[in-house]
Image 1 (tube, rainbow, N blue to C red):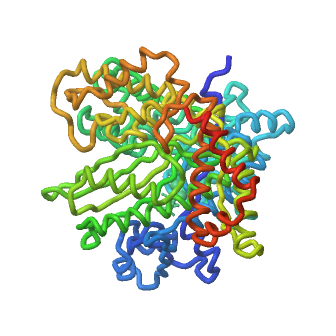
Image 2: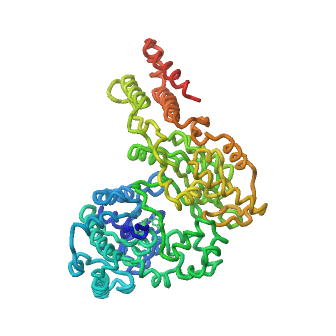
Length: 616
Ligand code: TTP
Ligand code: CA
Ligand code: CA
């Protein structure tokens, strides 16, 4: 019978990624000690610079002092902050190469992707008969955990690989090893293609789930790949610190280490499911119980684009924001950056964000206080985004403010058909062109399209996923905004409900303050801040079909799902009309007044009357 552990999962992670992108642009930097800095802080370090002692997060001048020969590239700046556009585009190039060979790819970060290559391996095994000897040459960059030591030593690698192949490949009872060896050949080929087509090297981990593939990937870098079999997990886990494992780098890992005395992964084996469930929620406890045994069932969810788009900036030291003018200016810059990226994303990926999350940190009595609030995302207009963010931060923060992030999440698909809004856009372009002089001087207004709610939410199928997502939307779960909750899929609303129930059971203890409760942690003593969220649940459980309604980010009305697309078109048309009128100014007005052609006035009236019906 098939089990999730029969999968072949690969993590590909680019080597010193920003450095590779920069040295591809400036070939004289290739092979040199190089760092890429943002705001004077080193973010990426080439392997040549690492060999000379340069590490990430040094200040640029300290890196130079440590290694005078290091070349420092400052990443591009836009909207007064670093601009990662070119690194994102380079990451997409890599994904496009992978996509030619494997349909199941999940982009995990700017330079990482998970692949489920189970089917590719089966096909390869069926089509080619191979012996262990044939595999040594194609696996020229492959390490096997447990067979090659921790270093990157070539003779240890090659001797270990050979031994492993001889021991396991020809053993008919070890199906997993045969499949992992075949997978490693495919991954060597994929990495070769990435190098050939994009001129980037990368490293890879090859195993049977995401957690193990990620762990394996980090064991031998750069330009190497590592196989981790289930049989080697217990030995490896006896030395791997808990916080090096995927999903355990944050609060859950910290709790395991500080409260439950787990230093390395194998220490988790001493905890029963019941013990774990006393500290963590049921799902997290189960996941931890499995991961301690090398089991992680999270699927690779095909997705080549990110789940959220954020514009953020730190304001370190003297750069901290200390007045409203400064706040308004920076919020405007970030909103501008976010709007540009959202418009591009809409064009590239045919989707639209429904939630805006404003996150900020301020200093209070020498402590950093973190706050976040989510609101409905209306039209992609920088002024509107800035206004919302300014309002949120101005209400919640004290000065000085040291970090701001404006993030867009909860994307819904946008249909390909242009629809009425597209017609109106073309009409607007044509008209404005005519008015200005008929040479195409009319502004190009992009990203107007219909919204379809039929498309499934990204990643909503994965069990572990939705927990993370609720936290993504409400970084402070104690402060869930119910107008946003109403927008979310019913599973997330259920999850929020479970959280609320847990909180009530937990009594009236004091809230944990700025950070709130983290995902996966049990509710111990988290207090009640108000009744509004409960009111929301009472209301929504009473009105069964609210789940099919969406609150319009523009006007706040609750709209039936199937009418949402048309409703958005109404706002698009309305905004467009305002924009055209404003931008074309007096000349437009004059022409409008003059041209009292029945056609023109009829069109305007018909837009309003057509959409007026749909407003509610
Ligand atoms: P990483 O994959 O963490 O690191 P890396 O690719 O530079 O090096 P390695 O070979 O060890 O994988 O990050 C990918 C890129 O993301 C990195 O080149 C720079 C950028 N980055 C940031 O912008 N901020 C950060 O805090 C980190 C950790 C990385
Ligand atoms: Ca990397
Ligand atoms: Ca990475």
